[in-house]
Length: 90
Image (cartoon, rainbow, N blue to C red; front, side, top):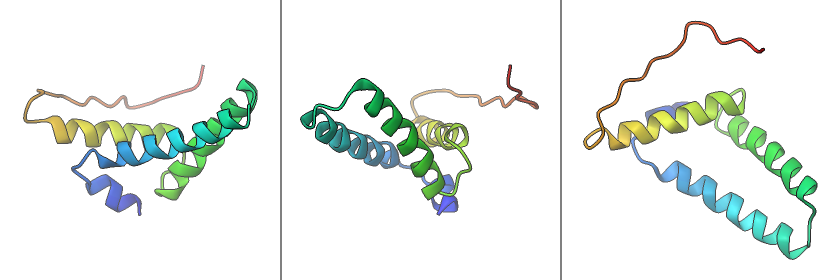
């Protein structure tokens, strides 16, 4: 599945993800969920969605989504993608 996302040139992936979040937030707010419950749900959803596309974590998943968007917009936006050789936690 990750290969499909990596090769996608459309920005429809972001729209799908936004709709999933919108629907769930609507349900949580209708249930009068606390901010803590909503925050925890968002974190869990991010991890689950990343893994469902074959990405190990949300960092790699959102990086890919950004690159897909830029690839889709390349006709109107000049871009350069620079990746650091090492990323560490502070």
